[in-house]
Amino acid sequence: MGNKRYLGLELKRSLISGLPNDVARHCLAKVPRIYHRSMRSVSRTWRKTLESEDFFAVRRKSGIADAWLVVILMENGHNSYCIYNLASKSLLLKAPLPDPPLPTGLEIGDVGGGGFATFKTAAVGALLVALESRTSSRRSSVENHTRIFDSTKNKWRAGSPPTVARSQFAMATVNGTVYVAGGCDHDGDFVPATESYDVATDTWTQRSTMPYNHLDRVDCEVVFQGKLYVRVFSSTRCEVLVYDPGSDSWHRDSSGMSAMDHGELVATSSGIYSLTASDCLYKFVDGEWVLAGSIQRKPSSSSSSPAFNVHSQRAFGLRDEIFVLGAGDLSCVIGEDLVCHGLFLGSSWFRAGSVVMG
Image 1: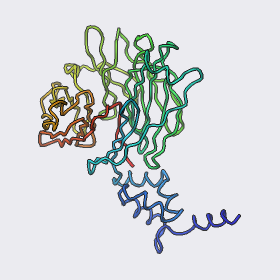
Image 2 (image 1 turned 90 degrees about the vertical axis):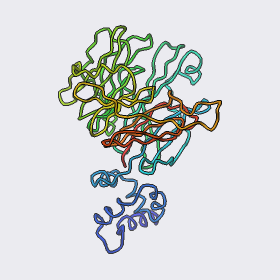
Image 3 (image 1 turned 135 degrees about the vertical axis):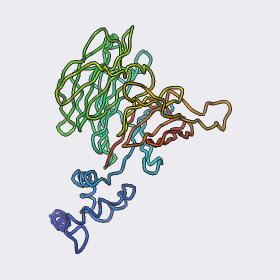
Image 4 (image 1 turned 180 degrees about the vertical axis):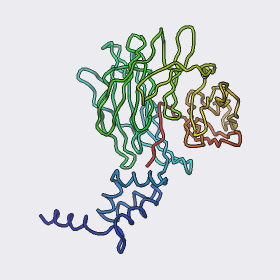
């Protein structure tokens, strides 16, 4: 009884003496997130405030939310995750990735040898939604597991799996909703299904099917101006399919975007770019891909290993900036309308990642 009474009194106290709580909450919201751990120890009231979604909604609405890149990677055969502060371009945290609960009959050993696991991610505010695909040769099936990372609390929790199991799919967030489209089943056949995920209610909803005409695989995806662009391949061609969530409809892009059939697509506030394996960055302008700049690789300190692991190279857009995550030290030579930064990944193998705002 005493503890409950103390907690009740604690929660009624002012956040900052002499200030209304709504004003005090805006003052606390302006403090960078790197200091939040220390701030939580001030009082139970502060801790409860700093762990509430309303507090981070204030930060995002005020335009002062911190941008963190959350990356899932593999190192020495084990999955882990790390967090980069994009403002300072520094590594904040690196920790093991918790294993999800496995369905009955599926063992970790099913993933090794004749099977494999892949990840895709999407961000909703301060949350990272990670969808894992485990392909089991023993069960002749694909299992999907949803994990949600709350960057405000540095905690993972399980989410419900999509209704259609698949691997090698497109996944992205459009206007606060996560969309999963395309992919392959266990036999490698194309799956044209589209689903949306509401992270607040932990529910999946079937959406319009992708235009299906002998497609083989999804290559990459990007979101620009409220629409999802997915590059897909068949045995004879490359094309870009566009999904409009407002009308729940797909159409084939006819603007010429499919002329760039390689490289990773990334979007900023000013347009869509493609970062190729040759370190060139192209921008899609008026129906054409125009060279915008290049990524310069600094020499490696070891002559026996490459300075840059192209298989771990990934690009992330944030407003008018692009962040390139790579295994070596990077410098970027880009035009006046774009700022590009390099982030050091080290020897780890990139699996998936997205930018959360909190």
